[in-house]
Length: 146
Image 1: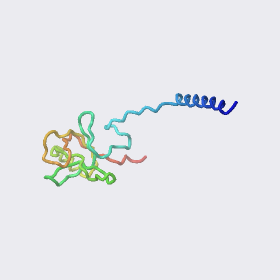
Image 2: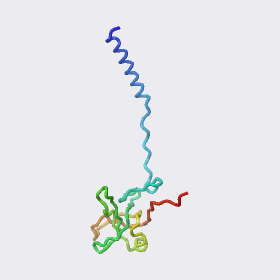
Image 3: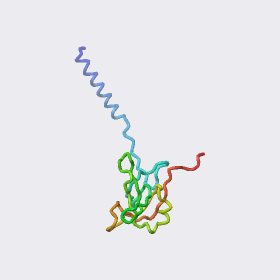
Image 4: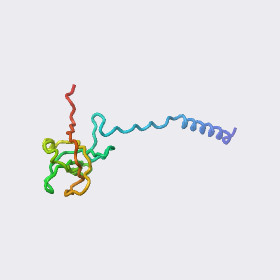
């Protein structure tokens, strides 16, 4: 057999081999559904920000601070130095008078605030306003080590 006669069977064998490998290879793993925001994975939490929820509420995560601007208001502050938005207002709390004791007790803490976006006009132009329904402190530290 000459070189031309040997090349055709080798090419055919290689073609069949590659076709067999391609059909025998398993497909990609299915992508799991993301966990609901209300059930974060252990040790993980969302970055500071304002997140719309499926039920129509919003979730604001960040540091609770009193801002002495525009007559004063409570706000959730977020951002990072690496992203260049450190100190950015995530949300302004529109109904602070209803949660005065909780807000004062949590000043400076990292919080998780649930509420609804304020509909209508506002006198403050610092950021999106929300009427809160719950506020909780977020702690990065776990319980006592075993």
